[in-house]
Amino acid sequence: MPKTSSAKLRATKIRAKKIKLLLFDVDGVLTDGKLDLFPVPTSSQSGGPPAQQVVVEAKGFHAQDGAGISIARIAGLETGLITRRNSETVALRARDLKLEHVHQGIHDKLKAFREILNEEGLSASEVAFVGDDVIDLTVMRNCGFSVAVANARREVKEAAHYVTPHAGGNGALRDVIEFILKAQGKWKKAVEKYIGGS
Image (cartoon, rainbow, N blue to C red):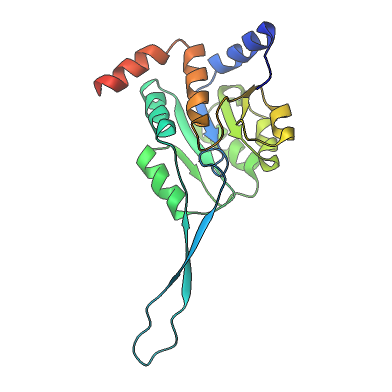
């Protein structure tokens, strides 16, 4: 990641201080972007039609991101995802992480973003969005704190207020949560509560 000037870093921290809701893409942000698809034959009944194949999708998630989301919740920061794909694996992970907002199969991410703002009664300046590819630009250009993961496409990094040190699926979301909560002065207290299990 290129060096950030102290003035730009201060401005970025000012943006992060206002954040009440952290939204993010999934593939390439919460995961490393790889889609593992496995054909699995279905069993056929004796004398029935031949067995058909179904495709099972697998994704890998980083434990540090999950811990970060738990710490964010302790600190009062809400979280959610907006993704173009539909995946039961993502739905399962979202339930496990207790995300407040889960929007899958979204082709117009900006529309979904604005609906969330209305639902939560938040201004755009109070919401962060983490992306990795050009489909995320519409939200990134309209939120208060836009973040690109280290493996994001060039256009996305150029549109971001902050670029994470780690790649998507490798702790990038944790980077964002730490940055926001440290800017808000909530990180240490939230970590202590997380360690203590309260």
